[in-house]
Image (cartoon, rainbow, N blue to C red; front, side, top):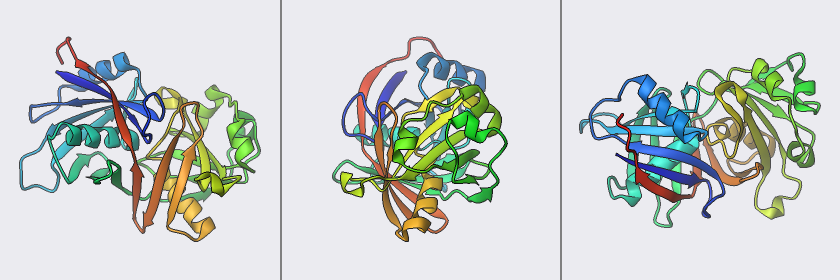
Length: 273
C-alpha cells in the first residue's frame, strides 16, 4: 500500500504542515485501531485515510483523519494533502467531494497548482476567558471565542503579533482549558509583508503540542478577522517553526481555504492494514 507525506500550505519542501495520506482501494475503512496505529507510527499532526465511494452520490471519497492519539472531526491540511495526491496521481481531477464526520467538503485544484478547500464556517461564540488562561499562555487575552463542536478550539486574541510569536505556553494547562486546543491570534504588525493576521495553534489534548499550520482553525479565524477588517478575502500566517500561509475567503456559512502542497515522501507501507 502506497503511503505519501505531503507538506501543505507551502510551495517549498520541509515547511508548512506535513500530513500522511493513504488511498485505500476497498469500499470500507479498516477497523479504527489499525488506522490509529498507522497514524501513531507516522507521528504527524494528522494522517488522512480515504477510499472511493460509488458514483452518483453526494461525495466521491470517504475521508477520515487521525492524530497520533485520536480521530478528529475536521482537518484542513490533511484534506489539502489528500486532494493534492488525488490530483498528482491522476486519480481524480477538478473538484473532489469528500464525505467526512463534519459533513461534505470540497477541494478544487487550480491550473497554477493551488488547491481551494470548501469547509463549513466555524460558529464563533464569545466566551469569558476561563480561569488560568492567561497563565497557561503567558499572555493576557483581549477576547476569547469558542469555535463550535467540530473544531472544539478556543480562539484567543492577543495584543499583537510579537506576543503571539513569543508564546511559550504551559501545554498541560492548555490541555485542560479546551476540547481540542487553543489558537492564539493577532493582527499582522505589517500587512505589507503579505499577510493580514498571524496565529499559532496548540493542541496537546489530541497529541499535538504545536501544529505547524492548522487549516481547520482558519474556518474560525476567517470570520473573526473578516469582521474586524470588513473584508471577505484575507491571508493568514501561522507562525510556527515551519510556518505556512492560508488564503481565506468567507462565503457566509462556508469558508474557502487556499494553499499549495508538495509531496516529499512516496513509499510503501509494508505492514498490512
